[in-house]
Length: 41
Image 1: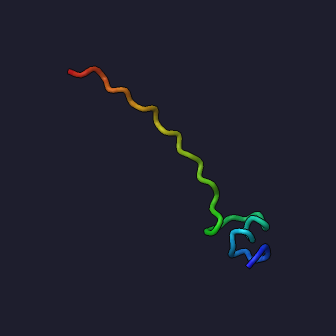
Image 2: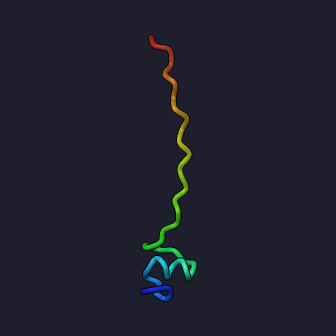
């Protein structure tokens, strides 16, 4: 359990790989602009 262990987060960082223990950072989805309510009828 250390840098050599690829099953741990530290080992993945050391090895430069990704997986379950070290997922890629998810890019934030561009949120839609807040809708302004239209004229009320």
